[in-house]
Length: 235
Image 1 (cartoon, one colour):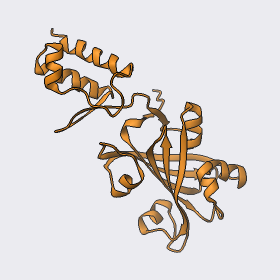
Image 2 (cartoon, one colour; image 1 turned 180 degrees about the vertical axis):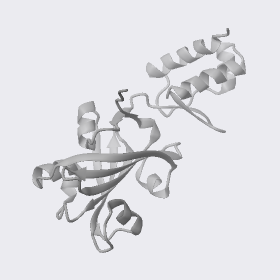
Image 3 (cartoon, helix red, strand yellow; image 1 turned 30 degrees about the horizontal axis):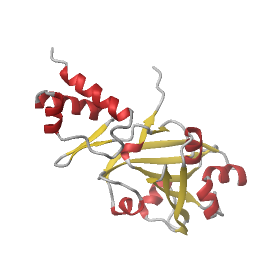
Image 4 (spheres, helix red, strand yellow; image 1 turned 135 degrees about the horizontal axis):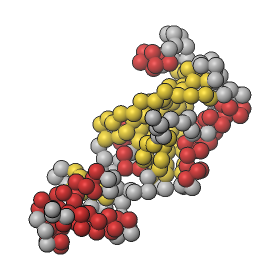
């Protein structure tokens, strides 16, 4: 059985992991790889497909193969953890920018998500998250005002959950989450450093207090090369 593609795959992996091919850089073209490794086009394509499957590259039609950042940040699916907690645990250089904070009567779709009547206000919070110098997350939060009646930009910039639990004495208990992949929007392009990506990973969260009150709906939009969503499962 021909295993030449594994030799090509392993050699390119070694170069990515050692930093010879840096994140966002392009691999040599298929033609150049064929000539360099003295193998067939089929062998190179098998190696590239394997690299893509294992999260080392993203193949873009008509452009080539872009190297992904292999030092991704793990986001727990099953836990209710703040951005501040995740980045402090990982030791990454992180920053939150509050793009919008306002009290409003939400549109119908948000009212339905939060099970509100037509006149109940929410806090709308839009925050961009910078990790290692790149804006890679756009968080859009809707927090019900009857549970959180006062909110400051400082609290949103530091940690919303620390403020809610520490200052207001509420207890965040659990969340239901949905994960999808969507085409990037104009808003994503405005606030994120999307580079060559035209898709984002979207996590929708419905978060509850310990008394089972639904107090927050969040849409968290992630540049796909920077994150791994992890969970623990037991049979």
